[in-house]
Image (cartoon, rainbow, N blue to C red; front, side, top):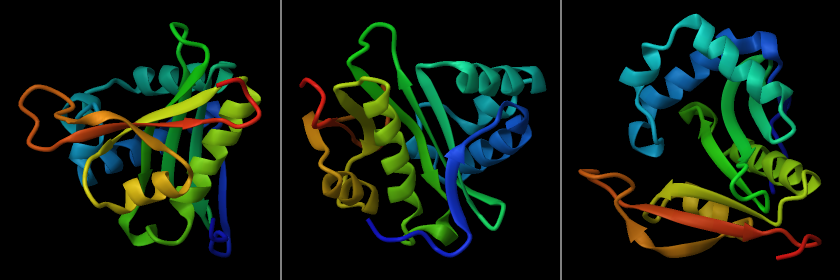
Length: 176
């Protein structure tokens, strides 16, 4: 993993930062609509109380980790890791996104590393994620980190004009 740019940090969101979370999440949905399981139209209609509640729940849960990447206090990326109650052995990575002007600088790798480390400490045996299929920087980053495809590329939802791919990383040191 390359070092972060000067002044860059990856950390857990704080519950009171819901406005920052909302702003960067909506920016991510606008910039990369095919990368997420939700839409800008859907989430822009959320009430402020939904944003506040969503982040507060995530920050207070032992099974979730909302992450923010900042450069000089400017939010430039986010990721959300969650261990679902239906399969406590697997942590899922959602909402992974880095602002285009900060891509290729190690921010995505730092977010990914933070999510993997949290999953390992939380007792997960694997980390899984969905990614838009193709020869993309995202897939190359996940592959470098040790993720492997789960099954074949498929449309992530009915009518999708692109293919998605599920990927999995087995965490060493934890049972597989």
